[in-house]
Image (tube, rainbow, N blue to C red; front, side, top):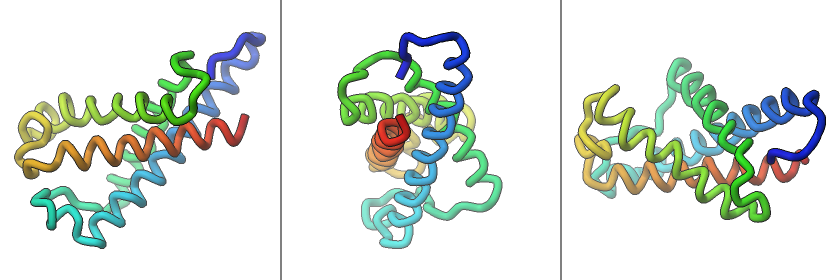
Length: 140
């Protein structure tokens, strides 16, 4: 995303990547909701929930926007799919290695939610990354 341009393009790029990250969070939330409605979490012995209240949804969007700023980095700029895949692993790692064990006290990789939690977290965040990368490609 980082392109050689004038300094006035910096606020535009920040705004676009933040908004794209929020769009990715919307897609991610929809995928999590669908997993909950299809009972996939329970079928695979994971106690995560696809339900969102206002606070959780807002928090989800803001974090999606914050992680969207990673797309300012010029890594893998030639491949939308690779960028989405790699950058999707960043919020997954944050969830699994910081949020679950330290903020929610649910163990490393969220194991207190079930042994397949890490798979759902990685998959849902890759969905976020791909949606964010595709949105950025579309608006450029």
